[in-house]
Length: 231
Image (cartoon, rainbow, N blue to C red; front, top):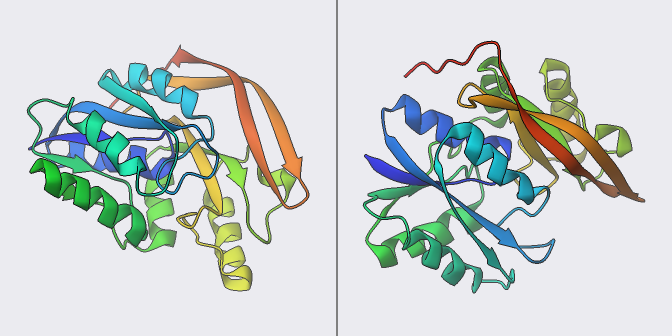
């Protein structure tokens, strides 16, 4: 199977990439759209500029474009980029529970004669986070925007304690443990599929009463002592 992966740099899209490699699938392209607005219905905007060095670390072709972020019209931008991915059979997303994202990508795929694959779809969100952490993913929280979060969450690395705290916020405030509703967004700074890790060198926290963003101003790739991927 030869596929393109929609990748934002967040945990679920990178884990979806990792997962299909375990299937033995060929991934010649990652596809990324930079929304020109912060409230895109389909695509992540926080620290999207880092996708370039993620692609370098993955050593895979990056097909990238911009979108004005207009609802539904975003799909035309996605379709245009997928048409540039020659010889693929399908498209992979990191969707976990978002029907909006899943059905829109499926619509574009149907128009192009491609299959749509969502390897994380309806996985238990608590167990999914555990899988990601135990697989060696180093995940940084870079945006929060839901009740129960505060500024201290910005820059936090997801570990077992963090997963338990997210589970608590789910019980008390109904927060999606995986952040699928946009409650928080992430940046994967290291993973088994990365040939080099991302070193975050300079950040700026922007906090506005009940939500905030960690803007990564400077980052670079650095060598890892070990790089391995079991396929």
